[in-house]
Structures are given as structure tokens and as C-alpha cells.
Length: 202
Ligand code: SF4
Ligand code: SF4
Image (cartoon, rainbow, N blue to C red; front, side, top):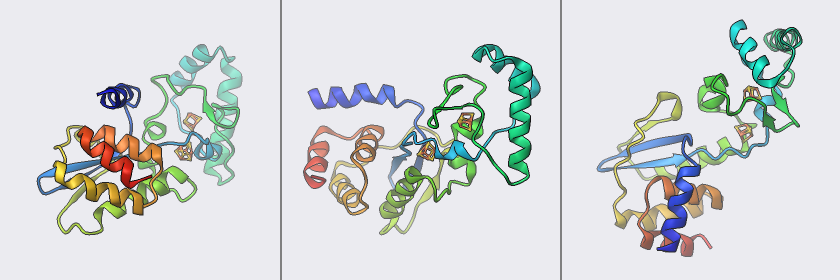
């Protein structure tokens, strides 16, 4: 019970998690995207903002509007000329100053899925793609939806008998503990299967 409660509590803290939904005959698997907060993607990308949104952000950050707009425009022009610099909202190389602000662009919220779902420089994306590929290896009929397609967050439960195979696949795909844990939570794993998964992935 304790483990189940612990996992449940964490479900709330991961709400809004990006995931790929694999639809299989009879059930679905939600594969989470676990960002490592390394900031790499923000080092060479500066999103486009409307002028009025920059004004709102300047008030939020208490950043003089003329300076913010100048630096944003300068950075954006460099990006489209192929000489990208870090986003002006990137703080201490890793954190976004407007991460929790509603005006953080959807391109950023949905990254890397907003970017075609592919970014070889993003270690989290590589892990995500590896796990999705491994889970599909022996499947003949499936549909895949990633976060950029706004998948229906309802997932059909995975039958208990399928969990040992899924847990073995996670081990073979070298999934991190964070990834395994989040996948179990997202898919509302039965407690007995959690124990199987822990045993198989030791
Ligand atoms: S590069 Fe990937 S892991 Fe790093 S912050 Fe961006 S999305 Fe997250
Ligand atoms: S707005 Fe934030 S998340 Fe988007 S590129 Fe800039 S620092 Fe990164």
C-alpha cells in the first residue's frame, strides 16, 4: 500500500508530463518523456513572441521593456540568420525564467515533439525514442500519437499479464529508473507488477 500511495503522490507532481501514446489491440502504453533539465535545447533556440507578450513578460520579470525587446529581437534575428545564441530567458545555463508563465510558448512546452520529435542532442529524447522502439519491436498492429498531436490522456489499462514482458523490454532498452518509474505511474500499474518490474530491472 505504501508503495502505491507513494507512486500516486508522484503522479500529481508529474501532471502535464509529455508522453507518446502507443495504441495496441485492447490496451495502450503511455511512454513518458523525462526532460533532464540540462538546458541544451535552449542554448541555440529563441522563440518568437508578439510585442505585447514581451511587454507582459517584461513586467513579470521586472526587466526594462526596451532592453528586453532589443535583446530578444537581436537574438531572434541571429537565430534566423543561422547564428543562434542562448535564449534570453535562459538563466544560469539550465533554467527558464518564464517556465511557469502562461506565455511560455507552446513550442517550448511541447519540445522536442514540437520539433518533429527528433533531436539527437537531447539525451532525454534519445532515451524516449529507444523505449518506444523497443516496445514496438514485436507488435504488428499499432498506432502512435506523440504530445504534439495532443493525445487523449485516457489510456486503456494494460492487462496484468502483459506487465512482465513490458518490464523485461524496459530493461533491455536500458531505460533509466526515472523513466521506468514514470511509465509505471502513468499507466496505473498494479502493485504486484511494480514488484515484478523492480525485480526484473535490478
Ligand atoms: S535538451 Fe532535452 S533533456 Fe535537455 S532541457 Fe532540452 S528537452 Fe530537456
Ligand atoms: S522561453 Fe524558456 S523554454 Fe523556451 S527557449 Fe527560452 S529558455 Fe528555453
